[in-house]
Image (tube, rainbow over all chains, first blue to last red; front, side, top):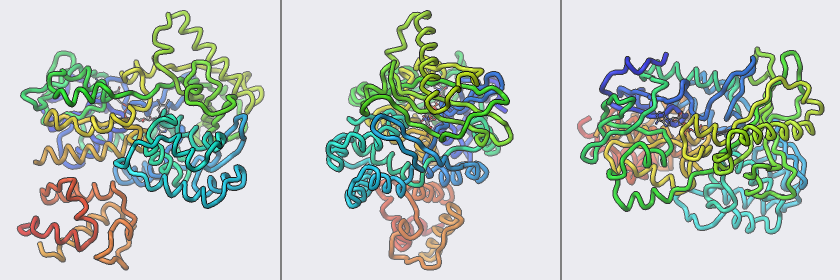
Length: 467
Length: 83
Ligand SMILES: Cc1cc2nc3c(=O)[nH]c(=O)nc-3n(C[C@H](O)[C@H](O)[C@H](O)COP(=O)(O)OP(=O)(O)OC[C@H]3O[C@@H](n4cnc5c(N)ncnc54)[C@H](O)[C@@H]3O)c2cc1C
């Protein structure tokens, strides 16, 4: 059970600020290695963006749309076998847009077959594309963009570009203008063996992770917002929460990297060269979501697990971000999501810009949210005719919602662009004992990226503490 | 530790990481990565375990020395001579 702030000791080996999957994993690994760890989270529950909420008997998952197969090995090694055993495949991924409509298991074999038979791409070209992206490393040359990569292999084939890019844009907010290596690394991950989910829902996963953290001795404190990371003579000393100082040899911030540098620390602690680079970090875009609950006792047909839908003639990163975008994904949660509970929910997700929503006055804001809900239900009707009559709860979240729950700069859903990785990896060279973990650089994001990054950072911190 | 003991230690750590790892046809001069299906995260685990068990700090630039079982032994022998 999380403890209240008054029960927290005044000295730890490590304090982890924030309980996203990155922060949770770093805390767990360090406690497992024998360090005394405090985990502090501003929200009342753990998980960060990996979260859920309840309304009128429905449970809505925020970021449980799908993750790569790599989660199986990662959860087994860095959490426990029970968590690993709850990972199951989402077998029906659907694309529906003016250029093509198809259903896939979203693995390399099926994609190769689709590209060959449906899109008529020669087999050796498909294979050489897969080989090229699979061979990409984060330290490779980043001058080639994803657009150039696609043009090289599939010139003029905007339909193929759409098939390859649309899911990744939803998965991490990247565009055709981001470095091809980020695309290659993320796409190869997903193309491993299909798309997977956590049976039992996000609430079950975070509950199991909380048990594991407590077993390993992590002190967990929720509803505590860290105001400052305290440093002294180029070293970290601890944190300040509601005016109280807690000391630690190391502090790991799972707050966004831009937040960590701009708000949690004083600029004077960094070198000019570091700040010059840090100030150039671009955060990724944010999201809108619409949560739809199906009335208890009603049911909907199985029309697929994850639907990439669009009425836009071609794929266009800008169109996806528009407030009135014609593109959205639908995640359908059938009773199999939470076996035992006879529930159906639908979550629609869109990429979105914070700027479009931030400055609306309250009345316009509410009206825009309502029209987003209305448009979403109308779009869903194509796949589930008459669904409107079965919905007894509908609610929207916007970039403002994400910003207020996670405190992330401009409500970013997927951390930062590529340059954030280097800053996150080198912050400890600026302030001894200060580390960052969390979505950065496009590749270190998503559930799998955040957990793996948590392990990498735990290794750095462990090395520092034992030096 | 002798060279043989170091190899056993590495195999023991790998077994902890992956209880299904099969060492029967392992060639000590070939990369562990290819033979045991290890990824870069697994190598990080090996580094972290060595630090935990033997207080060894292996800098990132030395990770390539851990490529094969024999190269592990060669690299670690002087570092673990008193262990
Ligand atoms: C709408 C949406 C859908 C997504 N869908 C998927 C998906 O289907 N599959 C997938 O793999 N990924 C998905 N993602 C991405 C994935 O959820 C994230 O990449 C991942 O969960 C981020 O983890 P993180 O460690 O970076 O931290 P975050 O989850 O960003 O958490 C950071 C935590 O730090 C806390 N914090 C910040 N500042 C402070 C402070 N000063 N004091 C105390 N606490 C603080 C915040 O409250 C928060 O809990 C989705 C994201 C969004 C937004």
